[in-house]
Figure 1 (cartoon, rainbow, N blue to C red):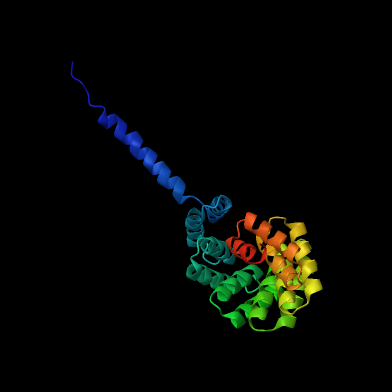
Figure 2 (cartoon, one colour):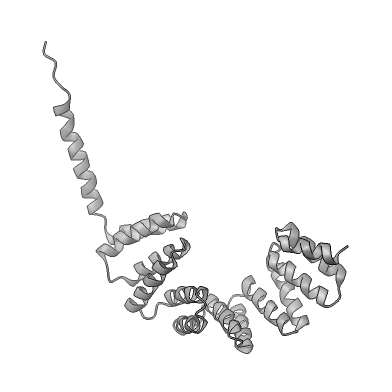
Length: 243
């Protein structure tokens, strides 16, 4: 009996399967890629998210939100130049996009372009007046430009908008300590630790403040806690001042 090859009967289904696969991929809408991008980003698969947003943008190139989302994913991947370009494109398409202004401000801050960063935070706040992070970050840049009054106002506004904003309390505490407003700084450090008992920098800095106030025992206790939480610099202070 002649044996028949199995190849001719298997090639067609295989090719059909490939055709269906490519057809299905080609039929994905921008919305589908958008959703899959969000899903990947939620799992910290930012490179996968970028690929999905690339596909979505190819199908819907005038959607500013897609550029913003891709910019955020690139920002998380530390591709700051790529993120900057995406946020700028998002702003061009949607001039009221507060989040893109805020993120672009963050990149400008990292580049030490403090005045330009403040401009972006201004736009973010103008378009979203309750944007606590934009106030906090603008405060940081104002402090770097020696505008201490403006920085204090921004940190306080961030706290007014978000009462549990530990980073804003910490920034205001550091500013107040630099200005020798020690009771107010202590109050803020206490609040940070109340909100987040593992905020290592709050223990370290509160220890410095207590040492400045000649509270050696309190300073050493705070530095010990900071060291236990992983701050190696605190150990040097313990060895020097807490014998």
